[in-house]
Every structure is written in structure tokens, then in C-alpha cells.
Length: 332
Image 1: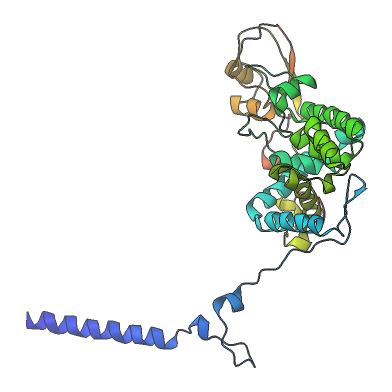
Image 2 (image 1 turned 30 degrees about the horizontal axis):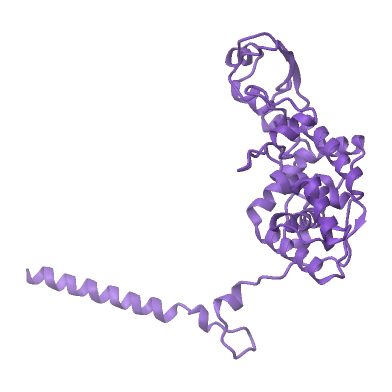
């Protein structure tokens, strides 16, 4: 017992000596000093620097000037720049997804006569995903069921074309052009996309104004245009806001798909996918407007579905030399 106690005492002494050595040699970050500066610095002062995002001197939305000389306009934009600059997770994902989806959205906007800036409205609406809102709005452009159907989108228990990017972008363009015709400006049309054309018109009339920036609106719509502007500014100038993404970090465009016709009644989509040389998961990935695993199709319609390209959808087949570049991107 004596021998055991002696060994324990020795080990304890060594441990204490080790702790003393550690505390004696480890620098307390609160006591670290900058060279030539006698003032102790805290860890925050020495290791963490947070900057206010730069506010541009001038901006436009769809070619219409933003009155940044008005203090509440400038501060409204500032708020959304801060939120989206320091909401790193979402903003990085927006930039990554934009590389895949903007090339699909942009030509449709141009063809439909809608300004290119409305691609940032799509980012603000859904983050470039087929999202579902608490109010049951759906898809990249967040259409409610009735509005989607009004502008030509089929929505039922089996098919939801709000989730088809091309079709829903065309429908969004039709809707925006109606709002522009009614309200007389693209900025007002963008705001009305959020709160409704009738609601915005009534607010303009009650307040004797004709500009979104002069209107006092509900909290969501009051921030909506500034969020679109902030996303535009950050995505067009990512490095100014601390986002250093390389081309190889972005989600690549998918290769041009094969197509097949989906028709008939009571079609088992597991079997359909297998017969067409793909998986059920890939069928649903490429055709997110299909909402069921069995197409009853009482109306006996025919649908064109996308299938994986002949050379596959693995990264080695998708990535081009441009996609593999490690240069930092400068604009989205």
C-alpha cells in the first residue's frame, strides 16, 4: 500500500507541474499586444473584424432609378445588404444555384420582354428552389394555385407545373407584364408581385403617391424591393461583400436531356423510369412537376418528360473545363 501511495503522489506532482508549465507558457489572448502598441487587445479586437457592407452611390431596378438620396431608402437597402451579406449560408447557395438556373431564366425573360433584373426577384421569392411557402405558394416563382392556373399552369393532384422552371418563368412574365401595364412601372410591378396589384393600387391612391419608395406598406412588402436590390448588388459584385467563390464551386449546368412522351392511364412511374433507362429518383429530379408515383391521367393527356442525357449525369460528364476553373467569379 505504501509503494502504491508513493507512486500516486509522484504522478500527481508531475501532473501539477505539467499544468503549471502549460499555464506559464500559454499566452492569454486578452494579454496579447500588437507590436509597438502597449495597450492590451481583447480576442475580438485582435481576431474578429466585422465591416458594414458598402452601399452603392447609385442603383437601378429594371432600368428605373432607386432614390438613394432619401434616407429611408438608403437605410432600407442597407438593412437588406447586411442581412444577405452576413446570412452566408443562404447567399452562398443562391450564388451556386444561379450558375445553373440563370441561363435558363434569362433567355425566357428576354423573349417575353421582361427586364433581366427580375431574375433576382426569383432569388428573393424562392432561393432558386421549388419551395413551398406556409401559404402554399409553390415553385421558383412562388405561385399560388389560382394565380398559376390563371396564367396557364396546370395544377392538380398529379401535375403541378408551378414546379416546372421553364413553364413557371413564362407564367411569371405574363403576370409581371399585366402588373406593369396596370401600375406603370417595373418597380411597382415587382412590389405588386408580393402584395397584389389591387392592394398596391389602393395604397397608392389612399396615400396620393405613385412610387413604391414613397409608400407606407406592410412589413413584408416594405422590405421586398430592397431585398431584391440587395441580392442584385451582392450577386453582381460578390467580392465587394466578401464572397469569394470559384467557378468550380458553382453548380454546373445540366447536359441537354433526352425526352420521352408520358401518356396513357394508370402509368406506374417506377416502371416507366426503368423502361426508359433511368431511376425513379432521376425522373422526379428532372421533372419536379410530377407529384405522384402513379399517373392516373383521367384526361388522357400526353406529357413530355426529361430523361438523363446519353452521356449521363455524373459530375465527370457534367463539368466542362470552364466549370473546373479555380478563378474567382466576379458577377452573377
